[in-house]
Image 1 (cartoon, rainbow, N blue to C red):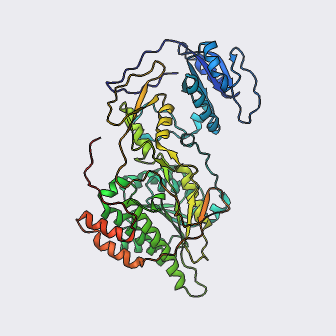
Image 2: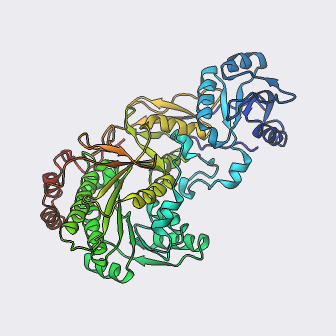
Length: 530
């Protein structure tokens, strides 16, 4: 098996390895034989001398013939000394991610370098890593394993009852969540799938991919910016969607600190435009994709998403106050979740580009934590939550996806590097990246750069005075309590619409803070050198 190469910076020197390393093989009764055949096809790379066989159900496996047995993970240090093994070649299926984490920890404790070889069946069936990683030799990353998460399943019958045979419109359809939502929706045979996106290239690409994968699904690609309220109203009236998923938004926290008017325009006014249009067209369900950053928002991005939530909730309530008997107005709901792995310009794509250049990887603060899930799981649960909203309720549904436990970003960076076959090394603030590497593995540094404007150390998914109740789906909780919308949202949105054209950034931030007092004090838009 050819050895992956990581471009190294001039300050990093990689010690040449001997021609053949004695290795312990770690895998299952199914993966070990295939792994041995692969290694036999690459003579001189490693010499298997021992074997640790694991099973998913904890049963006692058969011994691998011709290799010294390693009785358990706690025996690795003794096996290292007795067999002279310098490395372990690990081949475990992604379903055994929790055991793989323990294997990694025990190998590190025993001082044995780890090499990971994914099972051949998974390499042939799993979707490849995003093409924009910048690594010609990038391994196929198991995102769920990186964050230590078992994805929640979807209730196909319930979601199908919402989508099958219906006209579905998705805004921001070319984005990371929007495009995955489009794939989820297309799999349930809608009568029409409308892809609305303002980026020409992104719209072309998602339309092309859906045409290849779902040729029998009628679809329409609409190049349009939802911020344009009048044309949005006309378009939605013409398209007459039964369901609208609103995923269009600005999402980058530091960038929106510098451009608050753009965040107001896209996140708040764009939401108002498409929500009003859906209500006027008699759309049955409207689902706004929201974020954990909308809870007690300190950033401009979070503040504008919170105000968008409030507008949607207010519109839902207003429609019901003015509804005559027998009428069923649009049912509005919101779905909050944290960060998704693998989206465009997300942390993994940034790290992949940094790794391709030899490092170091950048982390803002070693204490920082975030909630993570994969894009496919997030999109599937958004569709699931949409099917759970109650049209008869006087309150708009607010659903919070089960993000599991928050992940420390530094831990994620370390797992990312080890998945690429290199050892992480924390670089103290202000120190140069010149530390020599170990004999066993090349190393790449992790540099802490400091918290950026608008960022929190730890995100929240619900307000302290909001009660989150379980639903009949284990991956989704519902907000059952909390205060009603006290702000006159029509007035607030009109005021912010007027100030968004101002060239005075501080004036825009002051207006925004009037309605979201938790917003952080403004910082200089100039970035300090790192």
